[in-house]
Length: 238
Length: 238
DNA sequence: GCAAAAGTGTTACTGGTACACCCATGT
DNA sequence: ACATGGGTGTACCAGTAACACTTTTGC
Image 1 (spheres, each protein chain N blue to C red):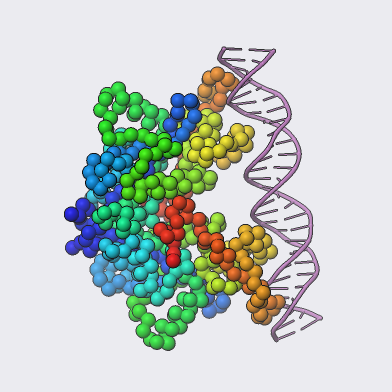
Image 2: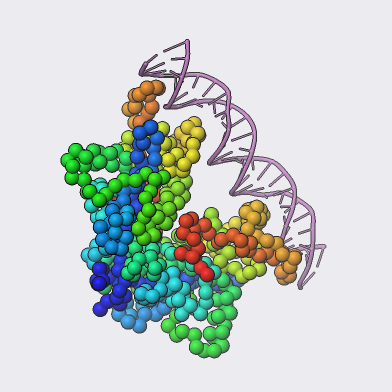
């Protein structure tokens, strides 16, 4: 017997990554899907779908994320459950997640899609500074996800979710700068992340146009964020 | 047409207040309801109920809160949406809120209930250190709510949600100590909350067994907590 | 050599903590 | 008077910010 007849449960995900623009800067970007059905047909919306009886919300989020990007996230956390009665013509409660993808994986996947020509046709990546009008309350949801990301970057290591396994301190600082939207002092940044003890220096250096920079790895013993009594199994990623 | 047939949406609330024990200490306490139906009949559970099509989740939380305590909360915020497939014999997604009640209001309401004799018979207040076995995953939910409260007290004014309109700095410090479970230096505590600028000193003093203590009020221009782009209308209280 | 990023050193400031001390009241 | 909590002063410590400086590479 269904107790809450007439209320549907959806799962949507704000999928964030760092994109490198043509002039070399790093900006936040996310994929949106073009709706083909009413309501809000022909408008852009967050990837998502209905929650099915056999899967948990976090599994549904990971599934829809894989369907739209072909990737598994480096970080995945519940954002909020939106349920205002007027947020959709029918009564829908959306459990929204937010996810981080590694920049290099997105680039590789995008290249593969371009090469094969079978990228999902109704999916497009948008820079956060250049979003189209969005369906439902999805604009507000994205703003909230950004606020959470910016808050969380201050007291956790979520920024690492954007980077590949090995990276320079400049890479990491660039991620922080893109998230926070402000310049950080390289000297102080170095000392702070070094003293945090989450980074393992490698013997490799990235050579480029200037003095080579040491590559670092994550200390994988440490979680990207503290979830409290909810273990990562409930709130984060596989 | 229902898309997610077979999934019910419930709303539960972790309702917290400060109770004064017989020996004068302040401890956190919350109301639980004794279940009369399966599953988990005759076990204690969080107050809550099914989400109805005409109300938003936050309204449902406020409604069930009023039904069990007769009170409106001084703070109300969404905690998390729990939706693991095995958390209930039937498929239930619970949107859980957490609320703070002013200690004096709870005391008054309890006294009124005792006097009239018509307190809800299946509702009982439990100290947090002395909880009974709980139905479903409600024990984990309470632990998570406590973790959120303890985190949030460090960077917001939520502790004020336990206190009446006028209070001494010792009252406020006692609330912080009960939440955090540790002793705070009175001198440093005073300077910290004074410099935060959220308190307005009054001309009144509470007289007692020793030097009278100045009473303070909230600066009601300031929200109890920063909700980011989600205004208080979505996440907090009326 | 020069430009530019990598990386180190130094200093000043700020907020938190510990704790000594004075103040005002009831008993 | 004295015990007790209210309230002030102060010294110290740690983390942060600002910025001068040295190192190492490509050109």
